[in-house]
Image (tube, rainbow, N blue to C red; front, side, top):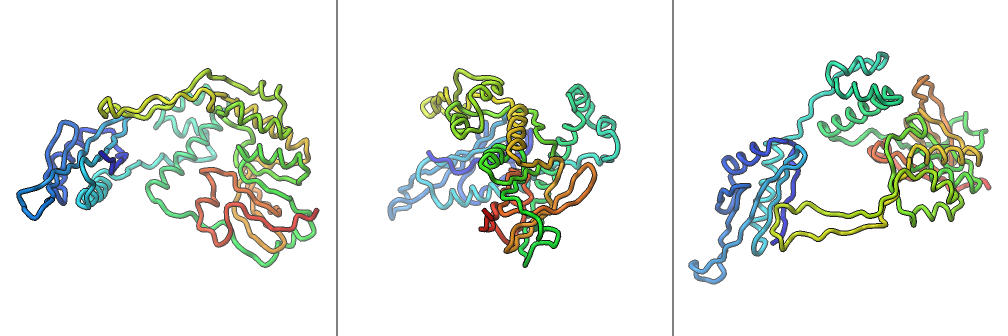
Length: 364
């Protein structure tokens, strides 16, 4: 048995998917047989010159639902044939057409108004719970931004605009100014590396789109991994202990196999020392920011990256301070993209340059 297809179908209506699969879908090849949870496709293949001697190969297709999402798998029983592969490709195309990604538009809001009042008519429970949170208005604005960004990209997937360009020289305003050795765009995990490099004497700038250190979740790590940061001198053992939110005695990994026979079910993988330390990310980032500034580094938070221009003398970054809408240009010798999934660089069609852009003159 070999898995040939695994799809996530964007609908909670598993009955509609099953009905379509059993009653409407017609495979290009093979004989379809309806089963309780899906269908089987049988393919007859001659193994001798005699047409009466055949072997039956079969494609088993079934659906199941978890957390309001429908899933489909197709397994080949017997030798995988070209006919099976053609049918799975046909099924994938047909499913995407029959059950496309459909996400409604978010309600338009006026950024100058109270976001609670703007969203209350549409999401009353969401607003009710965010009102109870410290600085819940700020965090709800972040949630709205991420949700809108995700829906737009799913509905109209396309490469982002070009944000890294090449130039002949730096802007005049930067020619007589000392450049930063390293500029980090993204103040989450980027803050840890920035603090280390600042402690080693480099002139560092950290640019963060949100308020620096604003995290409403925990980060998981192992003691062995964090020990490397202690060895680097960034943290002490006492500081590490102070930012632990929870330590777990054990952990395990288990993949969904409820639809498989017992002899094919996977064993539980115990992972007692893997990601078993939950860190308070707010405390961790605050500590990194403190060490970064103490070492001479700078932080520009609530500041958004617009674009970068790479010249022989260095890299010029255009930034905008979001609360005041003030634009400014800064220069550096090394640009590190630490924006993660929100990266305008990683999601763009770049005219030039990798995600880490450097100019090989450190001026030291």
